Image (cartoon, rainbow, N blue to C red; front, side, top):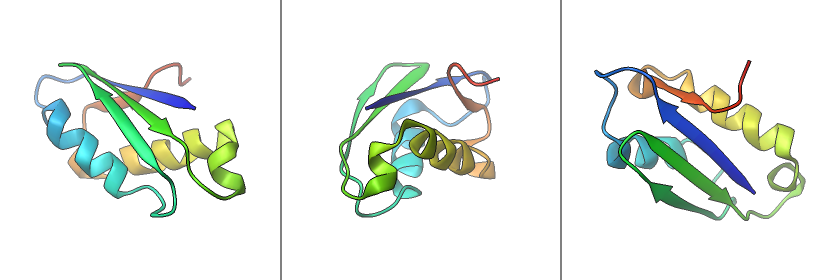
Length: 80
């Protein structure tokens, strides 16, 4: 499944750094890939376990990670 986050603040971390931080905060058993653009990151989750197969659970884990201050200025696309 794909989860996309977007940079909404000019003082947010660059995409290359943000993607490392984001994936590092997700469950270790999830297999993750990424596509990086200047202001957008797409995380590809192909993990093991029930949560990695559940879109809502994956989005919630990503949203939780994005609340970390090191990811200030990045938000889930399609949220709210």
